[in-house]
Length: 289
Picture 1: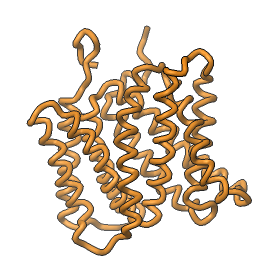
Picture 2: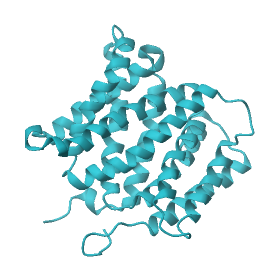
Picture 3: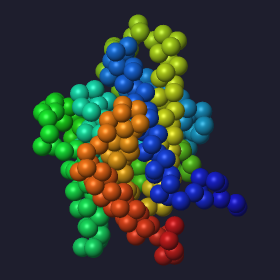
Picture 4: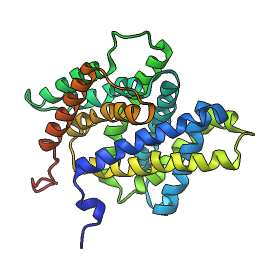
């Protein structure tokens, strides 16, 4: 059988496109906060994404056992919490700062799952880059925003581990077609009260665009990337995301980085590429995927 185009694309490319999509989706979401609130934005985005995944996969839920459904259900709960905390963080912190703090989650996953001292070099280099990118010695960021970013980072780390598990056990995007409706229900409890009465056609159209950029595109690409990368490689590759957030700040907000931030961007790019080159998973025959 001829592999699908997404299976032929390099794993690192899938991850990078996913990261770009996440940052653009976050930028669009900021415009919805005043209309339907942070939680309302998270809920409507997740709900539209859930509908999209169900229409794409058309899953037959009854064919899976309760035990098989446990992991995607847990992924749905984690995804909802991660999204709510991330949007709350970027509402209180600059995008680049929030993403850099959130990256501590993938960095922890990369460190835990590194099996050699040499492999630990790349997470360490990425951490140096994140510190240089965020310049924590400058300004007084919101403590509440930092708290939300840290919680989002915890969710991101769990998301990586559970998504790889789900991707190994469900074909295509079936796992996401199970987890996303769960995430929508979880987010509904805090999001629907905020959004109720404010869901105009304009808001729905903007939310549709945001949902395509996040979660539809990136979570699909990350699922496929995690089928071919180790958790350590994927976690460190995510170090590119703070750099991408900084780049979007330059292009969209005209925020020119300082010299230290440019050096930091170079560190995370180098760490991500190096980790990806040595972090491919092997199939049961020992062949690199």
